[in-house]
Image 1 (cartoon, helix red, strand yellow):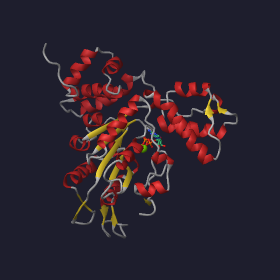
Image 2 (cartoon, protein in one colour):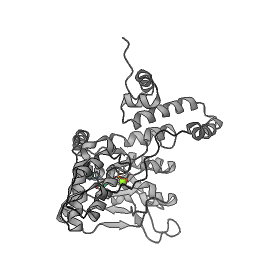
Image 3 (tube, protein in one colour):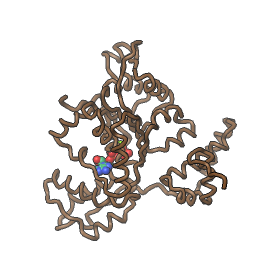
Image 4 (tube, protein in one colour):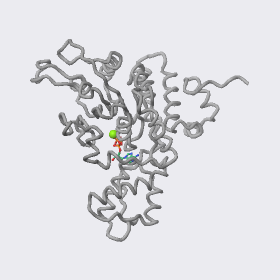
Length: 365
Ligand SMILES: Nc1ncnc2c1ncn2[C@@H]1O[C@H](COP(=O)(O)OP(=O)(O)OP(=O)(O)O)[C@@H](O)[C@H]1O
Ligand SMILES: [Mg+2]
């Protein structure tokens, strides 16, 4: 294969081009190395555990869901899984579901025949066919409209696609890796994500910690990006002064690794001394959302009223379940922290979690 192929522009919310991207097979990529795509930092004990987990998951053909805040490395991990799999020589295709025009998603995913709709001037294969023999990475899967979730499920079950405007089924051999920064359990509970699709996708799930929860990665990543930008800016790889290191380690990194990369890039542009100093570090990200909104009642009440008025019988269970799961997931499955954030005892939390089937029920004494 020769060039990367970009089919049609899809800008994401930040305006970045997230077009359909077919990466060259690993061999070719090695001959034209992309430092970003090949260098992985897994230094913190939590990341080393993740690395092992990835090594185990990668060789299989299992679907994988990658969960993580923005900038935690979801796409990098998806590529890692692909590169370590038997499909490494096949295509890796990244599609951002959040950046798609709703009316065109189906055509883009499954392709279309000439004349299938106004503007379909030629037959076009969709992403599933393009990823044949390789990996299809569906980013922000939580943004996929419900009607397309049904169709995606069908493709996963039948392992074949039908182009728009055609009746012919075309077999596809694709491994699916999906990423989300929203809690899909919560989305299932809220009815915006289909449970059957969730189970189909979630054969293996990988949770990427926020950078602040794996502090052992901060300096190795900073050093890594320092070298990357020293090379691209053609300047000496400066060291971080102790004060700069302290600043990097004390910051909360709401934008995670992506933000760290930007901070180091900027520092390498600006630093004039023999080392990178605190004044060279510009922490620009918008503050992390306030974790304790003071107007909880005000914000929640109208929503609850809406659902209560829709008169579904199980609002109580769903709201309670969602509350418990959200607390548990955002505490990274740490029961003590989840209980603390809810203001209940760990026992109470465990009772709810067992009731929801998240953990095994306690045995009678
Ligand atoms: N473990 C890692 N080692 C080295 N670089 C990393 C690692 N994880 C992420 N990065 C780098 O950090 C940046 C952000 O990673 P990536 O784009 O994969 O995150 P993301 O979770 O997909 O972000 P977003 O939610 O914004 O799409 C990229 O430049 C990526 O190469
Ligand atoms: Mg991403």
